[in-house]
Image (cartoon, rainbow, N blue to C red; front, side):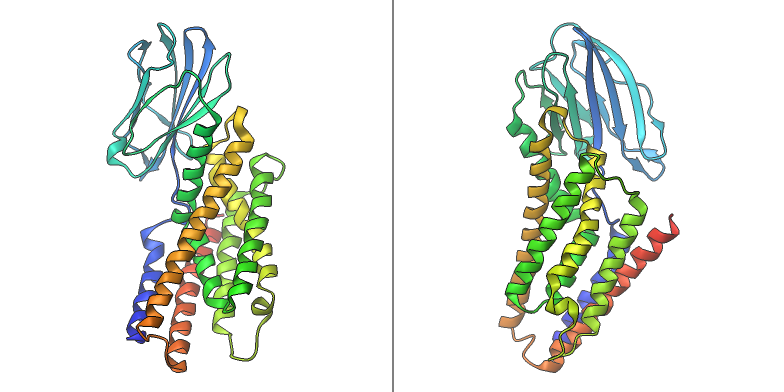
Length: 333
């Protein structure tokens, strides 16, 4: 039974690269900037889907003309459309819709920048394709939106999850695992904040490649494990986690830069995104821990041979996926 479970686990790990990219979060973006009392500049940014813009369209309130923009143009990263709308009166309490979003898996962020009020960020989802523009937006709305974005980003970031999973497999002592997780949190919070605020700038492709390399390193440590002979990463896992988490934080910042931070609520948005990332990470760890507990109850790890077999297969599975990502990302430089 253990060999079957281990083989299925390895097969799933090997299929991950074909199922998803490392950072699946690529939201659409809609920016409304007020130019005068009745004039708004609109910027719509649509994700690329196989060389074409995602089949969604932002529609302004009925009091605005035009309600939608021209055909989007490819800017090398996404599809962008810019236009100016004349709105007969205030757009507060008016609905904005993203047509076609109900058929997608992505979200769309709406950033409003009025002349006489703080900017606010709202969020469209496939289940909520119409939003009513608040007359008096609150910081709590920003916090809730960015918390959910952070939570979803970590759960869609296969490379970050694979790093955490490899850490769980490698570190056997629960207290050391807690220390390593704490170090991971502190480190990536530092670089996430510095990069998101523009104080630290590192090119994205090398960061993504080194993140993949960090997973390769953990896979090698798993395969080199020997009972009674702890490696450095097993004795002091917090050092390894802190070092690599600095790079993972830059990866999180890359996703956050795609979204942007609301000018008037940068601290709240940054804190919420980071807390969301941690909440998603804890949810993943809880699910893995529960799965391992169930396997132990079923007697899957009773013999030493079964444990060694499962560890070896898992190590090779993690190493295969991470090497695929590493080669793919380096070749894309």
